[in-house]
Length: 356
Image (cartoon, rainbow, N blue to C red):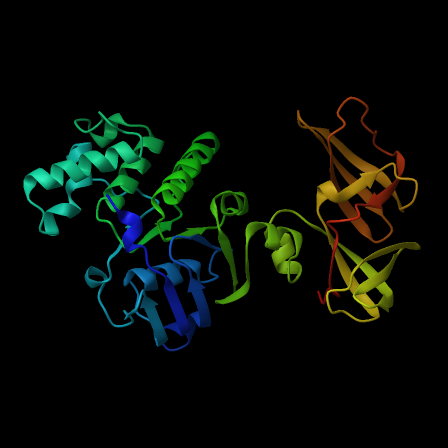
């Protein structure tokens, strides 16, 4: 199947979706999704990510603006005319049909004869690693296998865009990791355009070429997983994409593009990111703090937790609590120990002062 030849870009141009008179689910967003890329819509419940996905599918219609798939304006087209396929979190398999019949179901409405339908369905099952499972019922499969059947059913239709709505939420942690790797591998091997919705940050980081972080019906930031993790635009993104300590600081000097900051008498230099002298916030990942440094901020250990491959510490500083992850499990610090905590040269990021 030459699915990659049909992969198409998706474009949102000033799209708004309003329910009723005044419930704004999506507010004037602009978004460009490249053909052949996996783009994740990430955000908390109610941020607009699922509504955005459903507008691509044609299951919801935009109130304002336009949506394009490839070179077609699909804003007013029904779902049946959009050449997209959707994989739901509930799998939505027919329990009385075999796996082969489930995968073949959509092909029966697409004009293929019985022989080609069977061949395509068999190829689809092979793609998702379920060759030889065609005669089984969904109830005879694990949750991960059922989700792969749902993926195969969408793939055989050769859509321009493949949509995933929280596809792993019904699986346990180990299966989630396995199935997300399967989805990513299939997407890359076939060059599919995939739009993927999740509220799980780790899942988004693991599968995406690009992540669209949504908040309050709008877009907070767009970037690669590493861009968003290492250079969040604000506190919301820093806190939502992985854990982050938000530490109040004072920018005392700016030299070119470098800022000097003061935290409880400790000075540190880092990129200014367009900020000016005055109050600011510092976002620091738990792995970017150095315990027992020669120069840093004085803190006291409040909690020390062994979790196998690492230690997790909660430390108390004069500005509040800090969470730190350390790899040294053989010589851990103890509760009430006083430590000097330093900052990695790379990793800490300046943000505007916290307004909360």
